[in-house]
Image 1 (tube, rainbow, N blue to C red):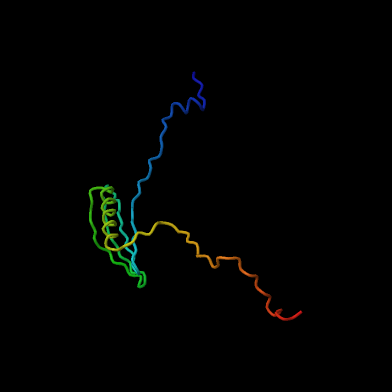
Image 2 (cartoon, rainbow, N blue to C red):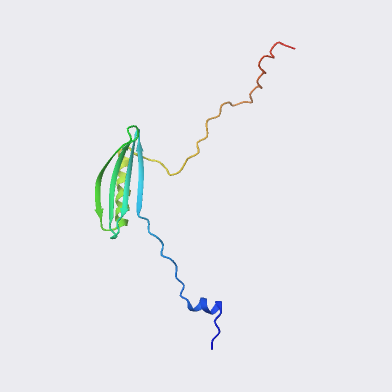
Length: 125
């Protein structure tokens, strides 16, 4: 009779790792004054890809979708919107980096300031 321990159980059980989940969307956002352009690639359940372009009027908060294309796989769809983004930048759209960007305010003074005087004490002793 064989005695089972935790060590022998680990050796006999196959090591399985859960499959990594593939991303289902990929997007690039470009801006122009008062308007956003969102280029979106979508992974379909059958493995194909689809791309769309959406313009969003920031002031009126209205969107318009167009340029829908189907691709044989998701990687081709991602490549297609990258090419579209490059073409859009040549037309004047700007690519805004993701996340918040820290921008320091300019200096208010260049030399040591004089201390303020207390209100109401000027001329009184």
